[in-house]
Image 1: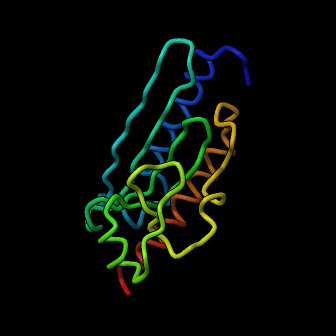
Image 2: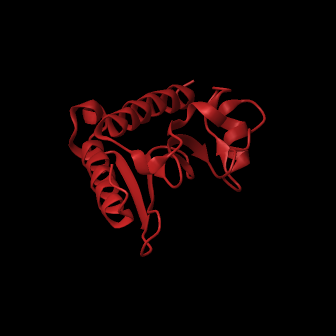
Amino acid sequence: MSNDINLITQQIETKMDAIEGQIFSGEMFAQWRGSFEVKKVYIKKENADIKCDLDVRLKHWPEGVVVKVYKHKALAVLPSVNDDKVAREQLKQEPVPSKFWKDTFYFSHRTDLDDARYVLREGNDMTDADADTCLTMLKGFIDDIEAILTK
C-alpha cells in the first residue's frame, strides 16, 4: 500500500463502502435481506488516519446490540452491546467489558475477543482479502447473536 495518507484514506473508505454494499446485497447475507440497520460513521482529517465504523444490527435485536466493523488504528470486528443489563439478561452471565471501548460489553460467549476480534493491528494495510475476512467474521458474529437470542 502507498505511504500517501490521503490515498490510503480513499482506499480504506472504498473497501469499507464495499463491505457495507455486501451487507445489503451480498449472497452471504441474503437470509437477512431487509432486516439490517447499519450506522456508518467515517471521521476523516487531513493528513491523518481515517476512522471508520459500521455498526451492523438486525432490526429485531435488543436495542444497543451491534456487530461493529471498524478501522481505527486496527481493523476489527466486534460483537457488542452498550447496556450491561441486556448483556447479563441475554448471555446469562456477568457482562465482560470490551477492551478499549468505554461503556461497551462483548455480546458473545467467546472468551478470546480481546485478541480474536482483530483482522489487522495496522488497519492502514487493509487489503481486499482483509475486507473479505471482515465479512466472514461479521456473518459468524451475526449467527452467534441469533443463536444467543433464540435460546
